[in-house]
Amino acid sequence: MSKVADIASKRAEQIAKDQLKSIIERIERLEEEKKAISDDIRDVYAESKGNGYDVKALRTIVRMRKEEPIERQAFETVLETYMQALGMLR
Image (tube, rainbow, N blue to C red; front, top):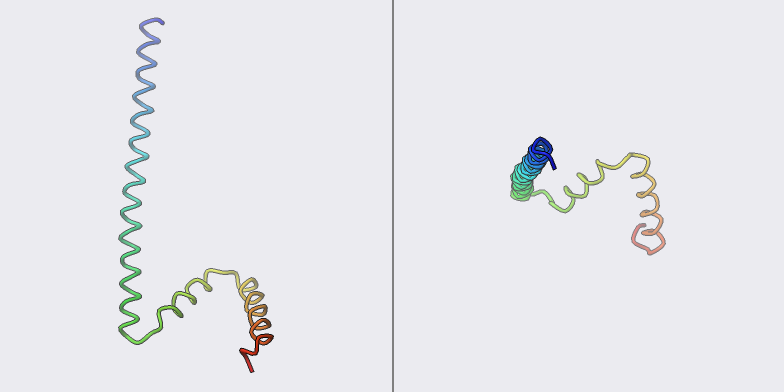
């Protein structure tokens, strides 16, 4: 291999290492942010519980609000049908 090719190869290798390091550091920063946000969410649920709200119901509502209205309505219809069949609704 020529000296120029060797230098180019080493440069390319260093660029790849730098890029990999940058990617890993970005992921680590995002993981830290995710944990901080997760902690904040947990604190809001704890606060809501302290104010008398049912955390399980709040979590269900948050999850349901992410769903498309048509899909949510279809699921609720099936759920209600099953509950009626089991005598859970009157």
